[in-house]
Length: 468
Image (cartoon, rainbow, N blue to C red; front, side, top):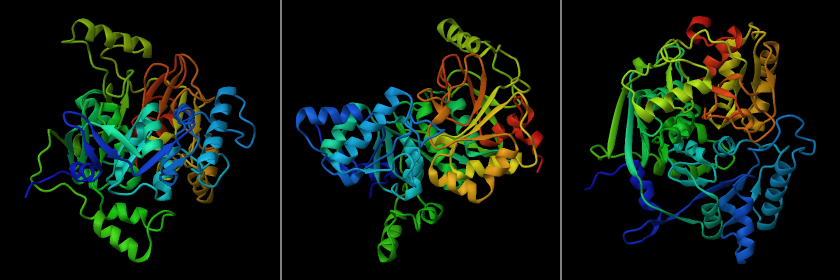
C-alpha cells in the first residue's frame, strides 16, 4: 500500500478533475473574504450575471483597512470606507455571513476563523490574503489567492491549482526558556532563506512542534509564506481537538465523536516520501529578531549582523542597500539599538495567548519613555477576554495603548503607521521597505522580545530582563 503524506490525503480528496498536463480542478471547503480583495471579484460576477454558488461556504469580515480607534464612528478615509461598505452590500446581496465592525465576532479574518471553529482539520481553505496559511495549523490545506481566483471560488466553489511539491521541516527537542513559536519560524526562515521553500507546501513535525499550543502553531503556519512556501500545515492531534471542542461551528454530540475519529487519521504515513526535508534542533533556537528588509534576514537577538564576506555582485549590493535602509552596518550587534515603537498584534501574534504573555512580563514594569507601545487584539473576542482577565489594566498601567481589533500596524493600509525613519519592533509577519509606513524600519520578533524592548527602550534579549 502506497505511503502518503498528510498533504496528499487532503489534496487528493478535493480534486474534482485533473487537467492532463495541467492544473487540478480543486474544491474549496471554506472561503474567507475581507474588504480589500473582494470588491472587484463581486463586481466581475455582476458583469457576468453570475451568482455566488455556495454562500454558506464563504465568511466575511473587514480587517485590513479598518481604524483601530473609534470604530463606532464613520470611517474617515474615503477608500477604506467605500471598501467596507461594498463588503456589507455584497454580503447582504448574496447571503454571506459577515462579522462586521462592532459585532461580537469581528476581527482579523485569520483570527476569527479558528476562534469560531470554522477552521477544521482536513479542510481546504482559501482567502484573498497570503497569510491564509495560518489555518494550516489545524491540519488543513490553506493558502492565499488573487482577486480573479476569489471570483472563481465565489462562482464555482472550485479553483484551478497545480499540485505543489512537498517539504517536511522537523524540529525536535525542548525549547529553552524565553523561546517562542515566533522564534522557531524566524529561525527556520533565517536558515533556509526567504525563498527557501518556494514551490513547496510545508508540513511541520517533531517533538518541539507537537508541544506547541494551537495559537503557537498558528504563528508557525502563518509565516510559512515568508520563506516562499505555498502554505504550511501541522497534523491534528489532541491539542487540536481540545481547542475546537465547544467552538460555535464545531460539531457536537455523536457528530463530534465521529469527526474526531476521522480527524485522527489525518497524518503522514510512516515511510511517506517528501520532495525535500529539513531537521533542526530546538536547543539551538534562541530569541530571534530581523535586521533587514525581508523575514529571512534574521539573527539571534544577542547576535551580530552578518558581514559581507563571500558576497559578490548583486547579492552584496542588495544586501548593503537593505542595511542602508535600516540604518545598520555589517558585523555590528543589534542588541542595545534604540527603538521608537513596539507593536503587538496581527494575524501572526494578535491572539489572547500573545497578549497574556506580554501582560505577564510587563506587569509591575513601565515602558521606556522613548517607546510608543501599541497592542491590538486580533478580534473582539480577544479584546473581551483581555478585559475580563485584567490584562488591559496591566498593559495600560505599563504604558501600552490598547486599540480595537484590526490588522493595524502590520501594514500601511490604515491609520496605524510607523513614521519615516523610526524603528519598530513588531510581532507582525513582514519587514519589507515601507511595510508599516513609508520609510518605516521594521524588526520582527516574538511578543516576549517586544515586551523586553518596551521596558528597556532598546533591543534586548527577553531572558536578560525577565529572569523567571
